[in-house]
Image (cartoon, rainbow, N blue to C red; front, side, top):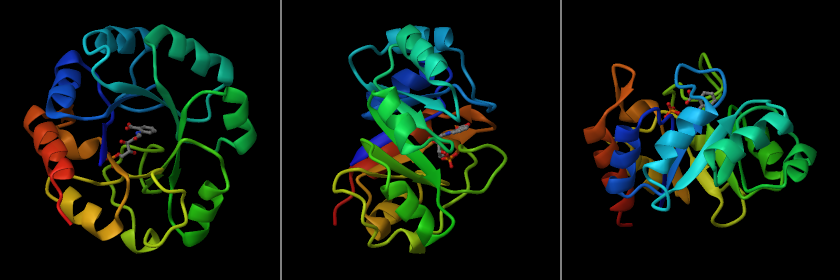
Length: 203
Ligand SMILES: O=C(O)c1ccccc1NCC(=O)[C@H](O)[C@H](O)COP(=O)(O)O
């Protein structure tokens, strides 16, 4: 089970995620209370370099700006969390996680029509495009036709519900931000418990 901890804003949280066994850590470069600059991300990434894959989250950003942030921070994946098209993904020509808020079955079809490395299915509800801590309607997700090994589940996951979510929806990966925070900051204990509970599922 692939585990991504998103909205990393400091070295302590990055190290906790890596030590706990997370596969991916995410940095938000879009409008958000978790926004970091490419320079801040670069410093944090340097402290865990080679131990984890890194993701930059963007919302309807220009390719030039995405490439600039990628080269400063040294990102492994670009997560596109807006209305980016298949052509945009092709033009970007970089490993991509395409995210979409899923509110209806047609949304999954729309997402699946795009060619990408991973599909991140999130809740459509909240103040920002993502990271709102709102759960996705899991009944929409069963028997989806995403290519094997590409489905990352997000939206309102917590250390307590991630095991149930994995058993119920059977994703290839899980992603969390709000659910491993306390009072708006990343919580080391929650990060450890989330990763452990996601990795230790037995079917
Ligand atoms: O996390 C943010 O603040 C954010 C802002 C704008 C676009 C995307 C954002 N996050 C992307 C993620 O991958 C989150 O982890 C995902 O939406 C799940 O968030 P949560 O429901 O808080 O666990």
